[in-house]
Picture 1 (cartoon, rainbow, N blue to C red):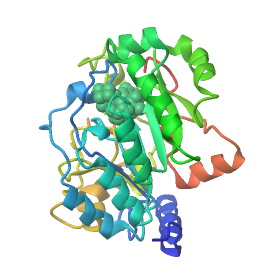
Picture 2: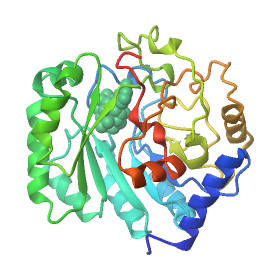
Picture 3: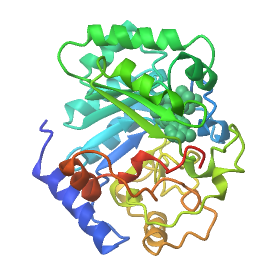
Length: 333
Ligand SMILES: C[S@@+](CC[C@H](N)C(=O)[O-])C[C@H]1O[C@@H](n2cnc3c(N)ncnc32)[C@H](O)[C@@H]1O
Ligand code: SF4
């Protein structure tokens, strides 16, 4: 199935238009869907909002995933397998990638790399994954302090084997570091280590996941929770997070689905994307009315003035993508 279609281009422009006009009722589909294959995880990273997860552990139903893919395939550009768990723990993760790929949807997956065994690597490469992002937060000492004992060497080794198994340029490999108060001094050393091995190295600043991560992580909301949003976020016009149980949350910050637009396993995604709850979120964003205690009102992504990259990337991100992805302006926010 074709990846670039007129319908997808029209959907992109229509999303940008509705955002610029400030409409809350949309006749579009999300351009990108963040998919949470599972909310189970095999790590306990200090800065992760997963410490505040209140939902029951579950895996996404594969058949329901296929139904949603079929519904959106002509309009949605990309699926990003992420969420508040480890995507490679889903028993059908390679099949999910393969199904989306066969329907012309670009696929990205973010992983902690622990389950990226040679066997798993073969499977996801053959499934047609477009980009693999591996989260490696610094060099050994700080990584271990954040992500736990005895995993750094294993993850680095898995990435090296993956790079050997991969033939050609697909999937693109992005090594990502979350810079925070304990590891940001190592950012340069990290970049130098990875830049000749991976296709891309990104260093993003820690953010507060809508108040679910605190300065003294875990389970401490005293720091970032004091943050107050000031600007409209573009995300509610362009993308959503499909949680493992089918709830549709505005973005990855809403780990417990507190602002859920509805359940896409019970209604069509289009209906949920345009529900009264979804419209209410767009309305309070456009009005910059962040007085309530929702995840959006205390989220510290989005007040970021800088957009990195060349001029084309800047223009593209400004109009068509979520420019907030660079993170907040301080390591401690
Ligand atoms: C929640 S994880 C889920 C995917 C996978 N388990 C992993 O660790 O890559 C998705 C991404 O969020 C990042 N992350 C976790 N906590 C964060 C925080 N407080 N601020 C910014 N990014 C964070 C992780 O490093 C990872 O790149
Ligand atoms: S950052 Fe990823 S690996 Fe670490 S606890 Fe959170 S979901 Fe798990």
